[in-house]
Length: 437
Image 1 (tube, rainbow, N blue to C red):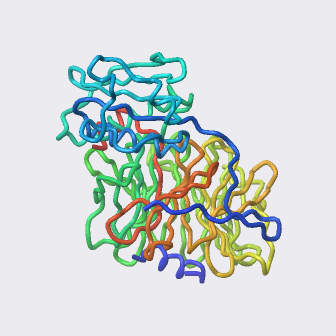
Image 2: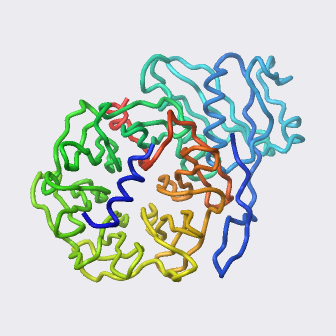
Image 3: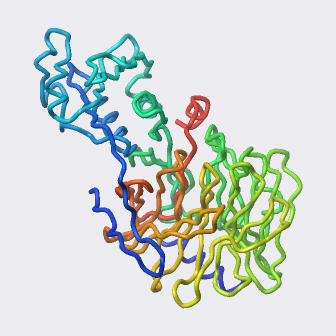
């Protein structure tokens, strides 16, 4: 196995809101972010009951980073609207608090009714009734997240990202959590090391490396029944860093044996036909990621020395450097992931021997640095193309953090134990939720 793979495997298997990173300029690379936009003030209106529902929906709306949240605890126990008893909303009070929008939640048969109030115009802008399963149902919280996403779309024109989940590795096991960091569930067995989990586009499967018996097989696992298959061409030697094609039929991964480390694709839909895309020639090639249209693949290669980010056509042709770098100023680049809109690729790159999160603009090949505090690595995009989850040790141990690339706000997700290698799902459909409770 080549020199790159040993430290990579070691790093993969390793076991309160924070202030925005300080904006600095260093050699033309921007650290942190500057935000000059405005966000409408949004208040969660009080009401009888549904306190836990309001808390979840309010947090989801806050986490979109599209609103300035107004007020604190507006549960039935925490505050009361003077107009509540008469069935009206005291628009004037909320306007003086700085709110332009208000969210009202009220019980409905089998679920909840949501109303979005325009505080300035003093009227209901949107409303809808949503069916919810029983609170004991495993899909209950995800349905609440879906309600929050719809409210976010009413208020901003853009759907929220609450009805999504993340995979990550802790102590060699793959876990799944909701987008707000709640309900961690182990998905792989204890005692067998699993690495590099990724979601299928339909949210009904994942792929990951299972280290066992001296090899690393590439496993595709169904969430519905836990059934597993081995990707064609990925049964022997070491197979790592999987990525699904946008249609979910093909799986790209790195295969490493005595001849080198190269990127292969495998038709997991028809369970056949592994194809080699790169030829090492004394270099390692790994960590593929598909563009949203499936036509290109970004990947890591050591062909020019330290690992850097390259790009090629999906058939392996037209390979070229994607992210420019300066020897001596920055070091190795790893873990690329293509943004949902296809405009950028996120990755981590060593700066003063510490990994930091970077973006490269695909069209202009401009590189910008997003983080500077602590060690930050393994980035993954939210489906809105605005938020990025990554691993950071800034709190004392490796945990999942999320950065809003427009405002620079960062927040932490609490996970059981140290976390590594996160993967963010697309928005999960009801069909996916039914097989992924």
